[in-house]
Amino acid sequence: MSFGDKKVEGRGGERKERGQEKERRAKKALADFSEEYVEKKVLIDVERLGTLEGRLLKATRYWFKLLTESGVIYLNKAYVIAITPIEEEERSANKGHRPCAQLCAW
Image (cartoon, helix red, strand yellow):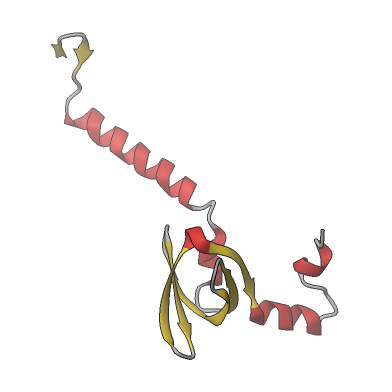
């Protein structure tokens, strides 16, 4: 069926396009590695606040949910400068490996 200059597809074509769009968004979401730190102790460097220490409870597209000694804090990712896992550093130090921060020092 055509409508003006545009060809209008039936529901099947629209559903297929929506499914493909969801797949594209899911692939883009994988580029954010913050989910690998969920349920781990981390140090988060935040612009204007300094460094926060706590357990990362949840990571969404725009926010972190961090459990600190003083309670739960929600951080906008736009203000996060760096995240450093604490537990991974301790494990790698015990194995004789240096953390990436030391290897990649500029």
